[in-house]
Image 1 (cartoon, rainbow, N blue to C red):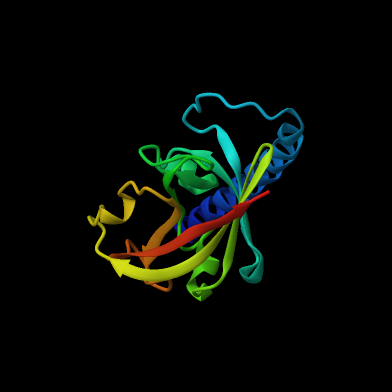
Image 2: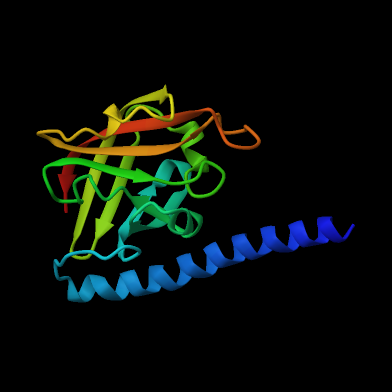
Length: 174
């Protein structure tokens, strides 16, 4: 009984912490749009906001992919391009939190990535499932691409055996 109460309390804490973090960082991000400046990003620093309107997905994106970051936000994989740069921008999040809506994504869906002063639009062109060690999806490219990564299958309990990958190409910026 005590263990069950502890687990429920911990789950409530994790959900509340992520929600509070998202709310605070969305406000900061909206303010930062007014004073947009490029600089070197520190681990955990807010990059922007990702959205897929059709799926109701909207979340803050931060630099890095540590367990703490992924518990609170969508993480930018540091070795990949940043939004606005030529290359492959790779973002990761948990399948049971921020990237849960990706279970319904399909080719043709539009993903927007807002950073201070700019909005990038990407069109989904494919999805695939790969083993966890597959790093080919993170390879640099000569175009402007976006890769979203989460665990798979979505309904799996415990550490998932595969990764779900969404690939999209930039179709414009505002």
